[in-house]
Length: 73
Image (cartoon, rainbow, N blue to C red; front, side, top):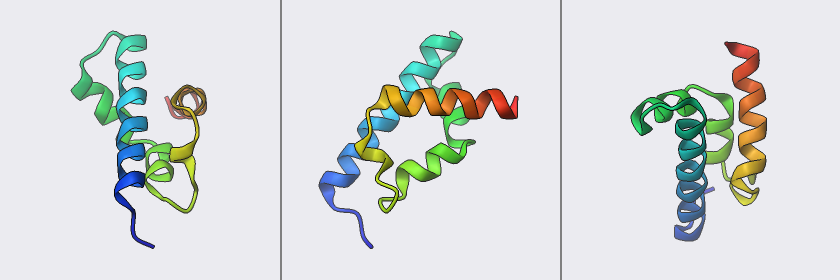
């Protein structure tokens, strides 16, 4: 299934907000936060339109991501 422009916009918006959360919480640069984000399973789920994670609030997804990071760090 191909992403629509709207889905792509929503996905990019969620990713942007989550990366900002990571950068602010860890006092790191956006580039460092992007590397952390894209090393997670959550990043793959957000980009997979079938999971519909991109429809969830960024703060909700970030809470899930924090748990994932805690488990792998």
